[in-house]
Structures are given as structure tokens and as C-alpha cells.
Image (tube, rainbow, N blue to C red; front, side):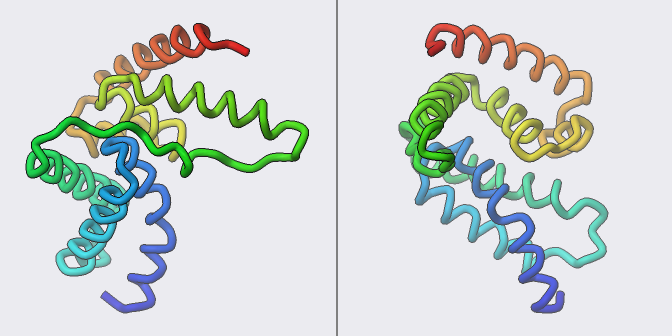
Length: 162
């Protein structure tokens, strides 16, 4: 692959892939390390004619996360939420941060698979068929997971409504 193409791919996908990895691991430094490992594998192993490069990156990243967790033999750590806060006008900032905190806290309570599917669909706007391909699920199964996860999120967020 050409160096310019590699740079473009990294710029295009690194942020969303990092957030996906972080949603799985809940550890900033581990997600950064795995992001680098994922792109290294991509740069070494993949040619530019791959039919769905984005899906392939997600699969490699997820596999790297699973390998990392197996090596660590520990539970996923508590979330470091600094990456999920956005800055808004001073008037709305406090309320928005509280709402984001509640949503993130509720999202992190979901089972890993549900959290992955929700992050892919709503944060990265991936179509359900692509999510199914990445996670080796049927599109119907993805729809069911999304439906159940949204119900769980709604219940959890309503507990904390401000």
C-alpha cells in the first residue's frame, strides 16, 4: 500500500475505531495500544482492494481486544469518561455533561455485545448488515440485540432523569 493511502485510512478510521475499542475495554491506554496494533496489522497484511476495509478493521480490533483480555485474565476496568464529554455553550454545558454521564454510565452497564452493537449503530452509523458481518451474527440477531439494548438503556436512563 502507498504511504498516502495508509495515512488517509488512519485519519478516516482511527477515532471511531478507538471509541469502539474503548467501549469494549473501558481502558484508555489499552484501547490506544490495540488501535496501534490493529493498524499495524492492517498495514502489513491487507491490500487496498479489500471489499470492506472498515469491517475488516473492526474485526481485527475486536479480536485484538479479546486477546488482550485473555492475556490480562482480569475483569474490564471502570470507564474513564473523559473521551466521551463534548463541550457546548457555557449555559448548556453542565446539563449536557450530566446527561452524557448518565447515558455513558447506562451504556457501560449493558452486556459487552449489546454495548458493541449500540456503539456501532448509533455512534458510528454502521448499517445493521455491516454490524452483523463484523460480529459474525445474522442481521436479524443484530436487530434483536439493538431492540433489547435500547429497552435496557431507556429503563436505566429513566432511573436518573434530571
